[in-house]
Image (cartoon, rainbow, N blue to C red; front, side, top):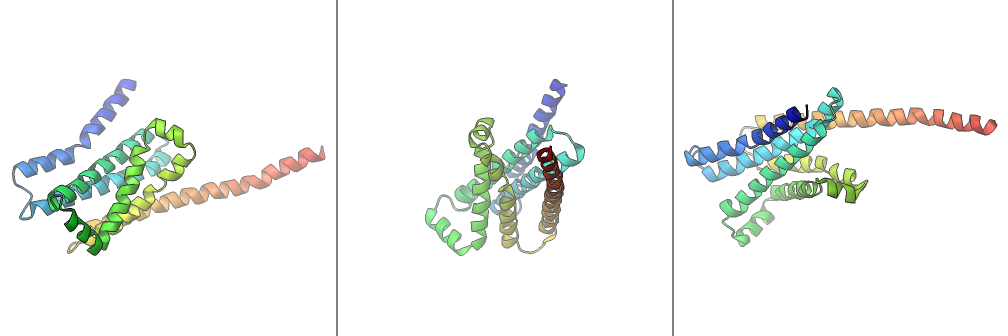
Length: 214
């Protein structure tokens, strides 16, 4: 059983690299179209966003299936979201602007959508470096609070994505609907848990009152 789980995890790790392999092949075969730099940049950003969405989908899937083993995959997909987001950022710095920091600075000032991209990346970076068990142990209760910021990262990434696009909005609208559904599911679970907590309070008080009467 353990061997099968390890095999599944190894296959998942390899499967998550398929988009990168496909991108490298397209670069080698010159299949990135008339603007290869832009295509490279967009595809890396798209996969960062997709892995971020997959990460957010793990909690609903885990809640529905009751499979606790999904937690490890949430961390794995989150790290791949960080990996592709990092490649997206590096492509912007080294390929789009060839390390011309003055141009990068002007671009950041003039392009408001970049601020949202940076915000999303900073959050994902913090989540990535705090993902090891040692970091989780050091942070204690603050670890969960920190990792809830993934929703802020998703929102910032969505604004970053929408703001820079021109033309066909079908794909970003699909991502927007998906994130709304995921956030809606999370809100429903939170509301349900809160209602259960409120319902339990009178019972607890009643038990305390009865014990005090004795």
